[in-house]
Image (cartoon, rainbow, N blue to C red):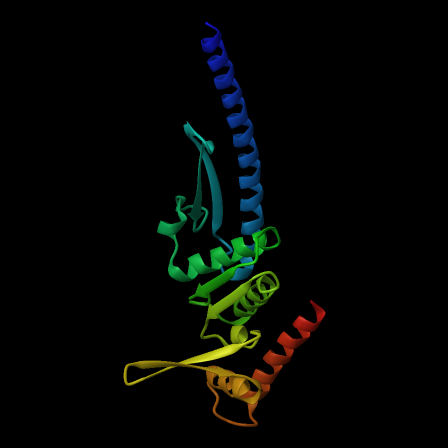
Length: 212
């Protein structure tokens, strides 16, 4: 009898703790979703919404919740799991938004972003570059990019070249970095508009670094 009563009391306490944990997770999920969605407009995903869904599942050592991230690409679309409803570029930008929101609460780590600039340009490219640079204040960030706006903000640049089926990676800095950014801008001159633009992008990155 005593053992049964003790078991029932333990089960009730476990259920209470699980419910408290669920409530905390629900609040955290709503807060995370709100902050991430606040980042998406500047990343060319203004109509998209990330939903952090907390649903009840079988009670286990980690609680009674199943947490899943969903993407609603526009208001009239259904929300689907993030890994099913986003393209590679969209997924990279969403992950960038999530990492920016969580950056100060994480242990420093190495992050790799590929195709984060897919299908974007202009002001959005500037916004992506600024967020990557901000993220680099807390983590080591490696970015594969074809956008000069992003490359100009990097602390270290490497060019990947392929020849006869062989890839070669070489570091570029100073004048070589500027030359590469000019090439990314589509220019081939030494004194023209493309070079002036490249130097302006590099100066903007240096100013931002010195004031951060």
